[in-house]
Length: 468
View 1 (spheres, rainbow, N blue to C red):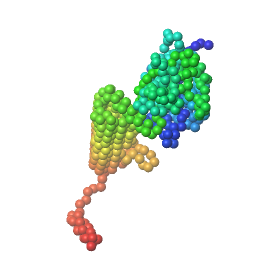
View 2 (cartoon, helix red, strand yellow; view 1 turned 90 degrees about the vertical axis):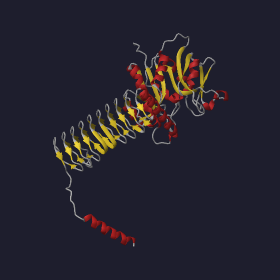
View 3 (cartoon, rainbow, N blue to C red; view 1 turned 180 degrees about the horizontal axis):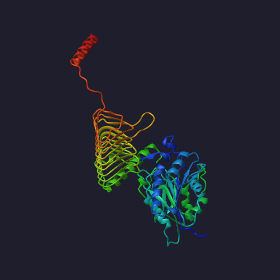
View 4 (cartoon, rainbow, N blue to C red; view 1 turned 60 degrees about the vertical axis):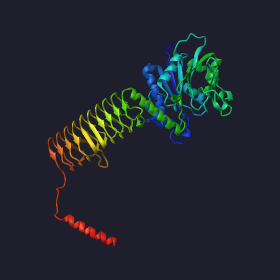
């Protein structure tokens, strides 16, 4: 049989119940920046695939059989991922063995164990451990394992990485089994490990069941690897990168750390932020250089901001493309399906949904524009709404280039306003307005002499009677 090139097998453990989240939702499906925890880990593996030969990377996610929603998410988010099921919760080593059952391993392959509840893991860390185990070695012992460690601010409850005087890892001791001397160690286990396939295939069968709880611990693989003569190395990364999410407090902390990471990334790319700590991004927000963000902004999924755009304070944007030199806000809302063209403006208290504003179009205040196209340099006056919903179906409004829509107008869709047309203020438009037409659709004004005086006299008299 012809030997294939070495592969990297990524195994993501995600079968835990997550009862400490106090939630009906599986732990790994809780969101950070609009993406489930598991999605962040999968995203890191996707980025690894983008820098190496995709055919040389496999992804296996280990789930419990009842996790149908999680399986559906995995299948939609990463189609090349394979799902393995851990029918009984018998520990991390058992979960890994469930994943290995469907893998075709060669001795020179690399297997990396990740966790679905560590959303801040970086692709660079995964790449480092992969490269270490993939590189040829001149040592007498074969590189077999790399353990990712960290130094948490509060090491209580974390397993300890026990090393010799040269820094070689001897064993991993769970906190509850650690001696007083071992508890003094601050270098702790993150849970993330990488194995040469030749090593993993030998150590997994060697791991013994824990008599106390009937589980098989992956941490016991370290001593087993040493017995088989494999070299074991550690890699220390910042605690924040590998901190697991187990509670709602952890989730909130991870969200804060993720947001801060994204803010720094965008600042480094040339995005100006007046108060970065008040701006919240989605996992997929795209921002070009020379964009300015004022305070108190929220970006939902699928937002792209092009160079020169200005987003003013207290705006909420999701599913939208903002083109070069456009201005949004303050207090604006862009909903999915919206494109705001070059140098267009969407001002305060304007909501836009599934609408395209062409270059230079404006809706500066107090309007709703939904399911519409707005032509170049058209102007939408304050209080204008597109009446797009009839209670059953949505309908389209077309506003032509250079059109002027007077304040407090209602455009009842489906309807079309022609190029350079003018709509008189307070009009309700239900029919097509042709190019260059002026359309006014409101009741004629009537005046009644002295009528207001009589109304005042009548009401005052009635008011006095009621007080009396």
